[in-house]
Length: 142
Image 1: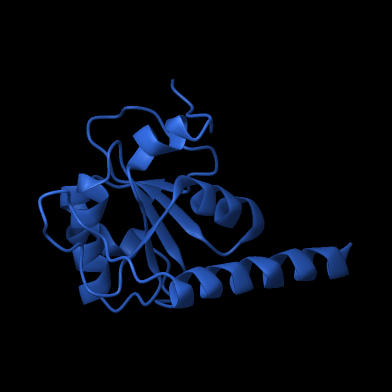
Image 2 (image 1 turned 30 degrees about the horizontal axis):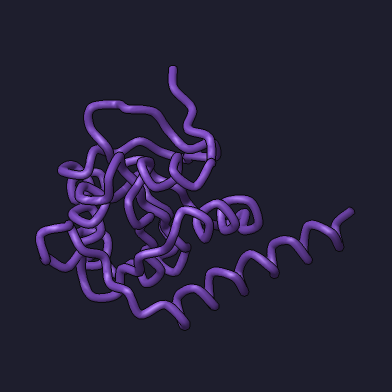
């Protein structure tokens, strides 16, 4: 059982590393503004695979107001409060942080303070929950 957990964790870490190394898309807010050097745009399918296989990834919904969530979300931090609530993110700045919102604009904005705080693996779901649902993936609503 322990060997299986280690294998799954290692697979998830390798997947995140592969996405970061092979992806050259930088987060964009849709108006041509970069989400920050180092924030990597990933597809909904890539995000789903990372969430499923990497137990280390910290998944954050930054959309306001609440418009649903992706199963496996670890925290809800409004995009414009990330800088003030940085202590709610993992202390280890090398932990992969996966951001999403409804359409992608807010998560691109939320990447800035994380990168400025020294987070090295900031992932942004390109197109947010809209793209997630278009890919046939479920969004949980309360």
